[in-house]
Amino acid sequence: MAIAIITGASSGIGADFARELRGLSDIDGFWFVARRTDKMEALRDDLGVNAEIISADLSTDDGINILRERLETLRPEVKFLVNAAGFGNFGSFDQIDERTVSDMIDLNVKALVLITHMTIPYMVRGGRIIELGSGSCFTPLPYFNVYSSSKVFVLHYTKSLNYEIKKYGLRATCFCPGWVETEFLGKATADPSVTVPKAMKPRLSSRRVVRGCVRAALRGRAMYVTNWYTKLQHLLFKLLPDPILTRLWLGMLKHPEGGES
Image 1 (cartoon, rainbow, N blue to C red):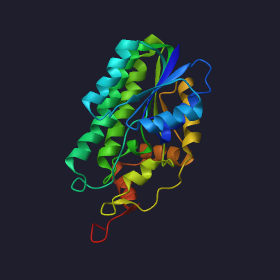
Image 2 (image 1 turned 180 degrees about the horizontal axis):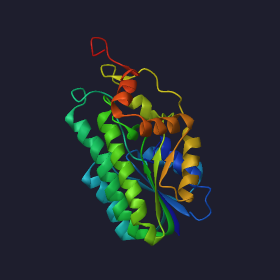
Image 3 (image 1 turned 45 degrees about the vertical axis):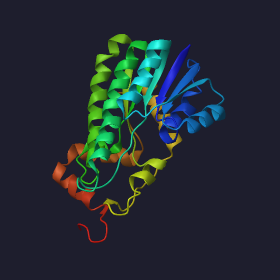
Image 4 (image 1 turned 180 degrees about the vertical axis):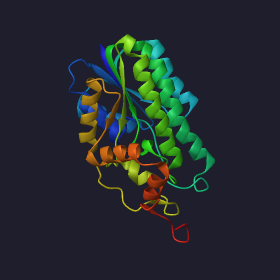
């Protein structure tokens, strides 16, 4: 019985990966991993799938160990691992408290790496790993620094991992979307006292970009960048020096009243 493990499965991109992977004939069940048990149970019932519900805060060692112990006990055959858990906040270094910064790094980076490493020994040949990167990972972004920097790590880690695991018949894909219409955007910009983008457009359909990512992963691509706008950004980031890109980004930001201009 081959399963798909999805972290961050309670909503947004993680939930849409469950919807998309449900249609694959070689996946017999799921492990949904997130904090909100009720949301995962509702997703399981809505999809009508066999799903193990694992409630865990993956920004903590205890949460990561819940999944580790479940793997060691049940020793599943894993066909897909999707690390979709993560969060981000806008704001300058002095607008985001240290606890939030630490949790962001622990969830976006530490948990992703440890969960990947602990899962690979249980993956079957032909298995696929999808790591959630971001369209923000291609250039330095002031006022979105910690989040975008964590995604730079994810991009480099995934590309390197993809080479290392080929000998086992596995492939890894870094998923780099632009602005996706999920609750992430609302949470990231919820504080009116911090610097945020003036507009986050175009906003993409989560289900549509997830479908594209699954296809890219099945083809063995090491990176999947979504729509034309994000692909154009990626190209410009390759061609233009960082100072120019940074000035363009700063021009897109809205500072709180009385803040920097």
